[in-house]
Length: 112
Image 1 (tube, rainbow, N blue to C red):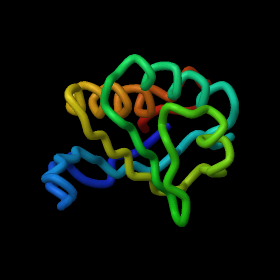
Image 2: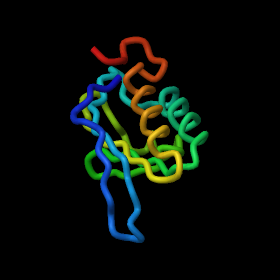
Image 3: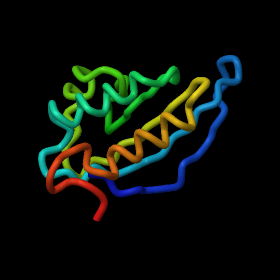
Image 4: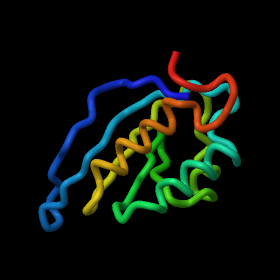
């Protein structure tokens, strides 16, 4: 469903020295991020304590909210950045990337 654009990175942002791990990927699923894949993604991300953010173009939304993910209108070919911060941020990012690279349960998605 996604194609990696760069390596995962760790950054520190001022605001109490918050650490953020993030990775950019390109959505390759033909139907984009619609109800089923958005539901799978948000349900999986809710298992983590870390905050998960998905940004694409002008939208930055919670990766734990199916409604926000759908409203972001992420389409095939859109580059997205997944960012995680919190006690299990590395695991959350790893799972998020694993999900999108596997196609989020959609036929025709997944890494090419």
